[in-house]
Image 1: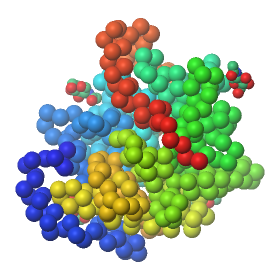
Image 2: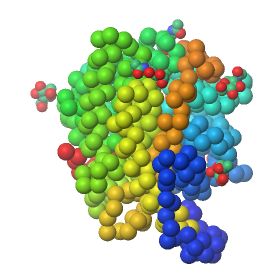
Image 3: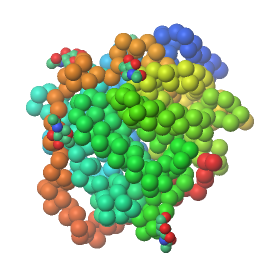
Length: 464
Ligand SMILES: *[C@@H]1O[C@H](CO)[C@@H](O)[C@H](O)[C@H]1NC(C)=O
Ligand SMILES: *[C@@H]1O[C@H](CO)[C@@H](O)[C@H](O)[C@H]1NC(C)=O
Ligand SMILES: *[C@@H]1O[C@H](CO)[C@@H](O)[C@H](O)[C@H]1NC(C)=O
Ligand SMILES: *[C@@H]1O[C@H](CO)[C@@H](O)[C@H](O)[C@H]1NC(C)=O
Ligand SMILES: *[C@@H]1O[C@H](CO)[C@@H](O)[C@H](O)[C@H]1NC(C)=O
Ligand SMILES: *[C@@H]1O[C@H](CO)[C@@H](O)[C@H](O)[C@H]1NC(C)=O
């Protein structure tokens, strides 16, 4: 972790002395200024990553960062390249994605069987979907292709749709021995929903559209989405499918952008239906902007409280920003509501990047408080959120570049049947799905004790 790195300390102190007093002054009307701000945050983020160096594993961040967050970060870096034109990280992103996707293209690496949930797997698939939509360089021909990987994850998750409990939905966990197997969380279902909508637009295959409707309808019927478009955390199968009411920004973001894609590809009454939802989500998403510092984005359920946000939660504003910007591309009428919020948030976000020993480390809280400019938090999530909210401002320069589709711009090779056979029997045989050994149980218990908060499962604050 660079903040404690001894080797860098001497240099960093000098740098801190020089730069600490002047924060990055973002000019939201200047492309160069926006690129400079996003690059500052990206550089800080990538100090934590060393998966490309000899002896390290591509696509893995050191603790405390879980596997899923690297997939999320690679998505952010695909956008970094697309927005800024800077391809510095592309080879590292491609290497890391391919290593974790695996030669079977299923994104089910054996090393992750004690932690991999449907949401985790989907964050990697969202990155490959972005790669296909943005025309990110394709992998070598003998490797799984971006679109086919996205379809594989989608098809695998479709085989996991569980009608036996709570009338449908995806469970959080894939493996029976992981804590959270009896929980159906909104982020897993929201990722699945968004993948369905984006695959529907990209491929034009109506099967994905049918799934998008089915996932939305179940999310409402099960109480995960309220009548006024609040997105709750998830539901617990053993307690009669009762809902945990915590609200996280990325859940709203997932369904927001997904609804915008559906709005874009439908017509007539169907389009009206999705527009109503889109408008409702956008309105309620106001809860993720500070009540007294208008239009400054915050993670309402953890940032203001002494307990704070955990490692995962610190990154959620990155995806919320990403999906707000994406929404303006496929539903342009939302732009005048969304862009002012992104601009004010990005400016506030960059003002926090005066911390750490290097003097340019970004903080977590973008709203002002008695902690000064930098609130003392630092890490991959903090850097990623500042990078994404800042680069998102460039969406307005991309009017001529909507997400590619199979017939317009896109050339990633697909495979509509990939993963459709369900979970890999080989993997299941190796780590016998039904009867975990004592060792597996212990390993899983330790892993889940620490990962359980990915969705705020054990969290008590409520956003009301
Ligand atoms: C491209 O990005 C890298 C890494 O973030 C940065 O160091 C470099 O200055 C950037 N190049 C330009 C031309 O902005
Ligand atoms: C799994 O772990 C082994 C041993 O550390 C490593 O060599 C391999 O690259 C890892 N695979 C993935 C996909 O991370
Ligand atoms: C695929 O599309 C990308 C982005 O437009 C382009 O750079 C690349 O050359 C294309 N590849 C092929 C094989 O057509
Ligand atoms: C379980 O939930 C259903 C639907 O909300 C409700 O009708 C039923 O009374 C609940 N049962 C118990 C035991 O709480
Ligand atoms: C659908 O998306 C395209 C591409 O961004 C956009 O030009 C078009 O206006 C959108 N359709 C609607 C109905 O907003
Ligand atoms: C459409 O998608 C479904 C689900 O993945 C797949 O089974 C089917 O083959 C696809 N149809 C076409 C024409 O590609």
